[in-house]
Length: 318
Image (cartoon, rainbow, N blue to C red; front, side, top):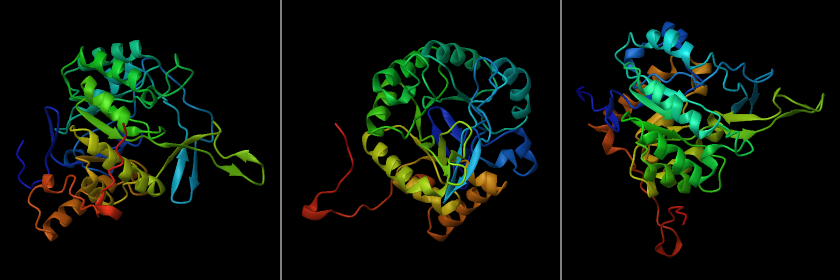
């Protein structure tokens, strides 16, 4: 694949024609009616589970100031249906297919990794380590650096496909988890999944979400994700996929300047079905206006301001 317009980026051995892709959970085959799948960087369907799962109780979504809370749950028809029915729908396109995996324990993650890596149509795997580990009282795998290291290293041992670790932002130090994932063999990091949140209806005095709590996404979380992308970029060397509040090309450029190689788009697609291709075009326009010939000129290009005493705060931990 050529980089004729300077937009191509790489995740491990995988090359994407643009740095824009959907976030898992906000994309499906039905979106082909609004988006040319050959014009985005990658196809990322909803996370797949081993067995069918019904998802969480309703209502599953509510609006908040500057965003939304969702608690869909990993609703899934299971990995066998994904292989039989969903993969063929995406295999018709030249765009790389990244399968996102959700599992209940590490052994199941490895089983799913092997099974999906054996499918020739799949080009990379995103390991959703922000989902709950049922053998650790429901804490996300990505909340523990040792668990993260074990999971990623074991997955690395069973496949040569590019591995992307999808991190949770609900941690004290995302840098610590990011380093563990990189050291274990991850090829890239998705920073990050949604923030645990809650909304209450004062009239009924009940939570607005059937599962009581859910994940906050949308513009409200973008400044926090930009900070996390920047901090992660200071302590790792692998590509970062910025995810959280990217609503337009300006947001995407902000993530890239903070250190992201790619961005994922989720909430924006609920508001605007053509958001993925619109954002891609807006990045192109930005590059033209600023005389940027290659997107790599922008990655990590933020010009940080010196702090009092001449010390530049990087937010490093450890």
